Amino acid sequence: MSITCHNYVGGELVSVKTSQFTPVYNPSRGLIIAQTPESDSHAVNLAVEAAQKALPAWSDTPVIERARIMFRFASLLEKNFDEISQLITREHGKTAEEARGDVRRGIEMVELAGGAPSILMGQTIENVSRGIDGQVQRHPVGVCVGITPFNFPAMVPLWMFPIAIVCGNTFILKPSPKVPLTPLRMAELLTEAGLPPGVFNVVHGGAETVDALLTHPGIAAISFVGSTKVAKYIYETGTTNGKRVQAAGGAKNFMLVMPDADLDAATSQIIGAAFGCSGQRCMAGSVALPVGRAAGPLIERLSEAAGRMNIGPTDTSTAVDMGPVIDSAARDRINSYIGIGLKEGAQLAIDGRAVNLTEPSNGFFVGPTIFDHVSADMQIAREEIFGPVLSVLRMEDLSEAIERANQSAYGNGAVIFTRDGGAARTFARNINCGMVGINVGVPAPMAVFPFTGWNQSFFGDLHIQGSEGFQFYTRNKVVLSRWNDPGKRVLGW
Ligand code: NAD
Figure 1 (cartoon, helix red, strand yellow):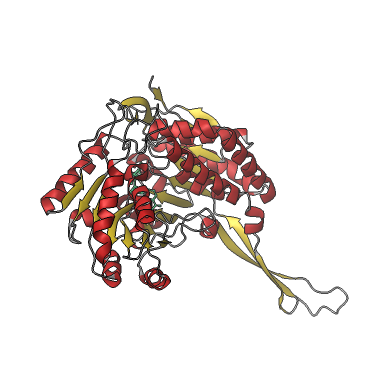
Figure 2 (cartoon, rainbow, N blue to C red; figure 1 turned 135 degrees about the vertical axis):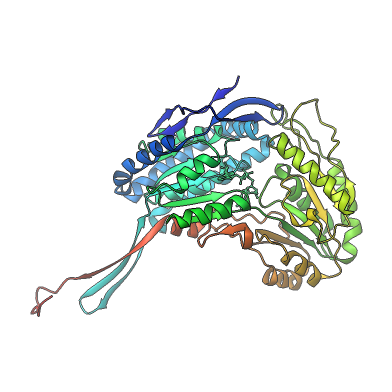
């Protein structure tokens, strides 16, 4: 049965008055399971008012008490781990293992937030001038907003709000309208963990709702994760409206394979990177750059491994290697890119358009697809496809491969497979992107590190996650105090 989602404002579900809805599918079946309303400026105002009302008391709450709520929230996420990961599988289509990864990585962010009392310690210099002590204090910035994509319904929101909240801010999450159920469940768990009403709110919607948030004078900071086009728009509009913005965008990630690499290990890593989550990851490895004699044996191994994958609905089976993509529009876009690649003259080693499923289904499926003999100028080599399509560009040597990868407009991740420390070091030093893997297929940083996209993969100064996340959600105040020694003669202030 299809349900209509409500906003979560001031600790309560609030229905949204609108006639505009986005369908939420179970992508494994192609069936509508819910609908997400579009919040107008009135609905956005209610959420901002609730967040503003909660701000003074919350920012005045000692950090150790705020952290304690994070610990309780983390235990509730653990307690409800199976239920949340099943919800992700249902509304997103990920395999059970991928959905569990989504929740696990998210919990790690909550655990990091629990360390706020140490992380937020400021700096002091005693007697910075005669009789004067100086200190840097870290204060919350105010009401913060998170705008998130469909591909990690738990993890990406959790990149943002635990740190924002533990720093003393209040928060409004605007999740992807395609996956509203997981964020709503997390809102309930936060309340159960003891978070006061209004500290965390959820408003649903798409572009109209985002515009109301971007221009609202009551909002201090915006975190965004999604496609590059929207990231750029959010950054430009948000900063023009006086807000602090961090906006992570799309990507095209390169995987170099040197002739000396352990090809079996590289194959398994590349298969995981290219086809994990059906290629719907900003860290998906979408271009393989085999160097010299690595090409032939690598493509043979990749095609064989991709051909063995079980593709099918994830909602009833855990024995599936790859699930559906998010909706029919995504499936059609990916299929059209496969057509473009063929027109451009690339050779299809594996074609995912006609896929044999583990069971009959009307879901949104594209099988693993591998293009060989791709050249750098082709669209499939340059543009983010966001589906299970791997392009292989054969390279002469390491420097050509690095040069090729560095031509990308994006700059999230790049990896090298090699047994040669010198090649790995040269690669890591010269590659023009923010996250580098050495014999690691998906170099997504753990919670303690920032998620360091470069170029068109990130707009802003302070990245999401890790110490940069804490910097983003706080502002520094320098306090200079003069207290004269009462035993000494005071010459005046
Ligand atoms: P998207 O850009 O379509 O949507 C992201 C968010 O922006 C959603 O909440 C959506 O409702 C909102 N939005 C969409 N169009 C808008 C518009 N015109 N104006 C204002 N808001 C708008 O992205 P998606 O399809 O949900 O997610 C996939 C994209 O996210 C891919 O490009 C992927 O690479 C990227 N992504 C990046 C990272 C990263 O860390 N760099 C992580 C995950 C996903």
